[in-house]
View (cartoon, rainbow, N blue to C red):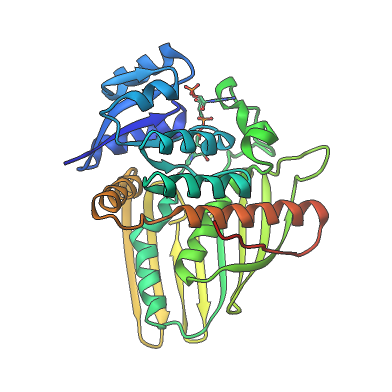
Length: 346
Ligand SMILES: NC(=O)c1ccc[n+]([C@@H]2O[C@H](COP(=O)([O-])OP(=O)(O)OC[C@H]3O[C@@H](n4cnc5c(N)ncnc54)[C@H](OP(=O)(O)O)[C@@H]3O)[C@@H](O)[C@H]2O)c1
């Protein structure tokens, strides 16, 4: 058995990662693609071997071969598309950020629940074996009491102080309404937020942030640092940006009995290495570059979540928590003070 997928939007993530990963995943079939433009949908379907191409989500949702939609559209559209799909009885795996407001995220969770469909969020870092090994080691308490997490996910191009303007189909990344009021936080920061929550099994209670944006002249930041406090005491930093061409995208966690260094694993492709140094566990591992592996595992996890009627790796609630943290980051950077995170029950 396979899940019949429809990909919603034909941007870079759909083109380079999601459609190829659906092809490569054992339990996934690319049934349909949706674009605002029929020609773009047709061309995408031809390139990726989709069975159907549509220029509206309504048409996609009428296709009985579609079991699930993978929403890869601009951030502010994730909520309405999720709700439409759920009402049509389709399962939803939506890209991060799940939504651009708490109200939208809650509505997505509620409507999916009411219609008995699965809702997952594309936090693919949860599938990297380095992160799964860290989770195992932390659950064994091999690092003792966790004190500090440092994580960075950045990128850029040498010689560019600021990223150049984007081509027309990517302009939505520059529109505060469509992207959700933050830029590099939406691109990579939310992944690190989610990974910290996943590894610690704790919520973030407060944060502060400094950014090169969140001002009237430059509403969207391209460089961001955050300091966060978790409920049981650990502190954490997250740095992200599009101005960091030689970024070391590492995660380091320090505890009272040791540390883990997960080097180069904060990325889209599966790659990097892991070093654990502690009283009881001392290991290293290397992860050869596997471009699609994290996304293939994400799709397979979602398939098993649907067929086994269990939660996916990242749930709607995980998506909501990342939205809450993102909105707190925007307030902290704009108003220049520490912000307590308000948690909501969907
Ligand atoms: N988890 C990950 O690793 C990862 C990586 C990259 C991106 N993402 C997420 O995936 C989503 C898409 O990112 P992307 O990099 O693929 O974006 P993108 O390349 O900029 O393309 C997005 C697509 O959305 C459609 N679109 C563009 N402007 C629009 C507008 N104003 N209104 C409605 N539709 C519009 C276009 O497709 P059509 O006109 O054909 O519909 C466009 O090709 C985002 O939510 C992003 O955060 C996740």
